[in-house]
Every structure is written in C-alpha cells, then in structure tokens.
Length: 416
Image 1: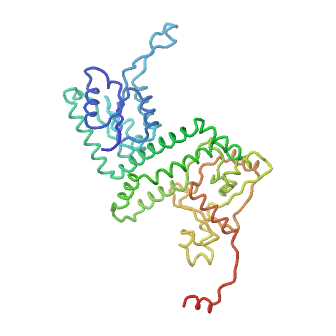
Image 2 (image 1 turned 90 degrees about the horizontal axis):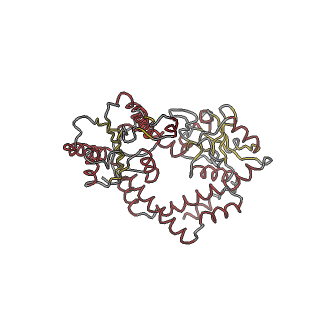
Image 3 (image 1 turned 180 degrees about the vertical axis):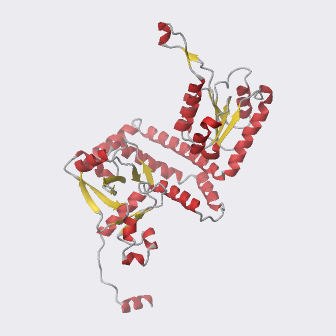
C-alpha cells in the first residue's frame, strides 16, 4: 500500500499496552506516523494531506484530568468526561477532510450514536473495531491482520486511490523544489512578489497565490510518475452505465469542476456569481487586474454577464435553437454560452443556464453591487479555466467582423 498511515492513539508509547504493540507491529510493514493527541493528528492532516489510512483511537484517556487555575480556588483537577473525549474524536473526523480509509478503535459500541453521521461524510471508508477483552498484547497480530486486510480490500475496491496519493507526492515534491529555488534567488521572495503586484494595482494576495499555482502546474505537467499514473487510469476499463444515479454522480463531478463554493469572507474575484435580484444572477467578468481598482472606487462599475433561473428553458424555445439543441451544450453557437449543473439552481444539479452575449451584458456600479452582495451573499464562483473561456468567447463575440463571402468560382479554383 502506497502512502503513509496515520496512527492516532494516546497509548502508542505506553509500556505493556496493546496499542503500542499494534503500532510497532504495523511499522514493520508500513510507513506509520504515530501521534498521541487529536491536536497533533489535525496538524499532521493539515501538513501532509493524504494518508493511505488513518487508525484512530476513539477514547483518549491519558488526560483524564488537567491542572487549571481552578486549583487555586480549591477545585484541584478538573475531570474530562468520556462523552467529551468521544466528541473530540467525532469532531476531529467531521472537521478534517482527507481521502483515505479510516479505521476506528473504540472501547464502546459507537455505531448507533455516531455511525450514520460518519458514513454520510465518509461512506464505506469507515471501519469500526471494538476494543474488548480480546484486545491484548498477545493478540495484536490478529488486529494487525484485520487492519492490513482492510487496507488491501479498500485499495482493491478503490483502484483510483493510488492516483491521488501519487498526486499528493508530486505536489509536495514540486512545491518544496519551487520554494527552495525562489528562496535561493531572493530570501524575501514573497514580499518582493507581493510588492511588485501591489505596484501594478492588482490584489497582491490573490496575485501571489495564483502565480505560485501556475508555477506549480508547470512543474506537475513534467512529472513523469504522475503522467504515467494518469495514463494507467485512462486505460482502466469500466462498464457502461447510463442510469440516473450515474447521471447524477457525473453532474456532481462536473459541477465541482466548474464551480467552487465561496466562504463568507472570500475576496471579490473574477468569476464570482452574484444574485443581483430575485432569481437573476450575474457572473463578474471584470478582469482580475481591475477588480481592486473597481472595488475601491465607488464611481466605477463592474462588468457582469447575467442569467436567470430559467434561461436555458427560454433559449430552447427559440426557433433557430430548436433545430440544433445540442449545439448549445458544445459552445458552438457564437452568441450563446452554456454552464451545466449549477448548484444555485438545483440541489439535484440537473439545471444549467445559458448566457446570450447579445442581451445579457450589464454594468453595475461598484457601490451598488457591493451593497447587494451584503444583502445577498455570494455562494459560488466559476472556476478557471471556465471563467477565462467565458470571457474569451464574449470578447470574441464583441470583436467579430463581417466580411464578404468568397465567390464560388474562386473557391473551386483554389480547390482544384
């Protein structure tokens, strides 16, 4: 199994404990990172990212009590209840996102209390093993075998797991090399890039992030191991499936590729989808280099392309569209642009929208738009490269020039 196993248990370094014996035994077969607290486990997840598996103790009993200022008041040690410890493990799983098998050891049967919520988030990636009287140092090999078999079964039923792991490794290797080269060139490289962007009037924070993402991409496309893994995945055969469940899952996939959910404090960006009035939305197409200037100058205006919740249905009613409906979905019609599976329009992701470049271009005053956003917060934005495609097609539509057709005799003469 490729990748590192995260083993989180507060007894992995305690003498004569089965947890320690299991930890040491697993280390003889797999690369295992051991941590003794959920706080360290969270930091490991944030720092390393993808693990092949997470082995998690559900109850943490090492800190049954802790010293507090309350001791000065005569309270002494303050007890931490079992429920609080279990809630901590539960919160750890709900608040951390990782793509791996999760193997839980619990002294109690937690399936009834926590099972449903955990499976809603992680699906069949959760395996719960109860620590009962059989969990002893002498029988550690049995539990080790179960864990290894569980990992192997998970790997077999999720053959595409190896690709995200390779991807994570490639990203980590590339970003470390990039940081090394940039710091060798200039010790204050982040500040200098920031100041350069600031001088050009763009949002410096976004510029630095986007620039480093582009450099990272240039490195990844040269990673032979990652390219080979992608080729192998592309050669994998799967059964044809046109069921409604498959349609919905693919719509969910491509919706995620097209749109990102915005956090409440996300900066204003090109591609943001704003609700400008009831059931009418606008996509900001003001270029990123002008966003900061327009945002801070209340007299300037943002450029948007608008659409309504029923724009696709209305477009499909037009006579010139009825004849070739499929052309809309392939961006063939020069004046129309299609977006699929918009989460703003349907929870089932079965509704898209169409923007008509001839009628849907609008300008909204900077102050007015920002006031509307306060009332109707942005929820999603269009991702790259789809926002660039939208802007490029719109600009191409505006810049089109009519020219006389070539005479048929000239055409024939050139062909012959």
